Amino acid sequence: MSELGLVLQKAREEKGISLDDIQRITKIQRRYLEAIERGHFHLLPGHFYARAFIKSYAEAVGLDPTYVLDHFQTDLPAQPPQEQLERLRRRRAASVNEPLQAGRWVSKTLLVLFVVLIFGVIYMAFVNNQGGLDATPVPGNSSPIQPGVQTQPAQPGTEAAVPPPAQVVQPPAPIVTVPEQTTVSPNTTVTFESQQGKTYNFIASPADKVTLKVTASDRCWFEVREYLKKKTTESAMLNKGDEKVFELPKNFTLVVGAPTAVQITVNDAPIDMSKVKLFPSILNVKMQESAQTQP
Figure 1 (cartoon, rainbow, N blue to C red):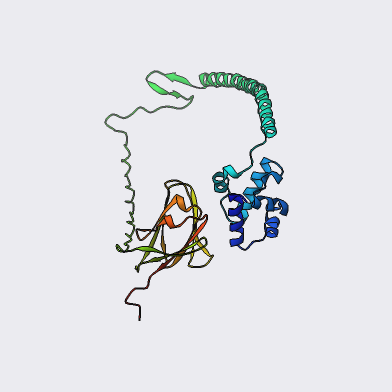
Figure 2: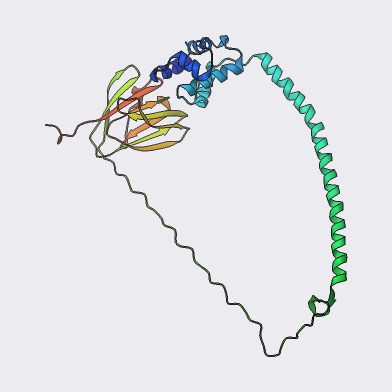
């Protein structure tokens, strides 16, 4: 069984979905779904359908198909030489037809522009001739004299009314909201407690607030769930250098797709990810009871 098939099968079992359910959702025959889980990609109908089937399977079980295809590129079946040759032939045929189609398009465009130019010249000549017949320019005056209309000379000692300057309305000052600073306990510690399969249990020292920070050193997906439950409250796909910060209840469960690609802190206290090696991994973090609340 390949690592890709194992990841897809575990994701399906965690959601309580059978192969018949996946077949009903994706319309992919059950025998192809079984071949994907076992890593028998040679039983799938070609390289193109193999990638399409794996993408549909990943979406059906709640995984990011792009991440799955990129992360398990080496597990995917190699593209057959025949398919590569067929694609090359189609590209060459398209490149041969493109110059002919482009030449036709350019010829039609130039013809339309030439016709528009002729009509524009005719229209401008007609407008200029009409303007010369209707108005007679007067020296010292830029406006033409219309027939039958008398112009009144300006009276000496009078000044043209000057409109008052427009008032400039200042826009209101923007309201700047200063985010509330989150304080965390400076003495928080996170200790590894136990492991059951792919589930890792950690104990954190008491704190008033819990701030979870996930920083990715490579592409990775994760989910934040209610403590010891499968109900997801937050999920994200992180690229290299991305960082997410959450305010969480005191106890929570974290599912990490690639534990070697993230650094996780609880109230700035790092979780020892060297203890977490399985893919994917489930981290249960429980806050230790304070001495004051214990009987």
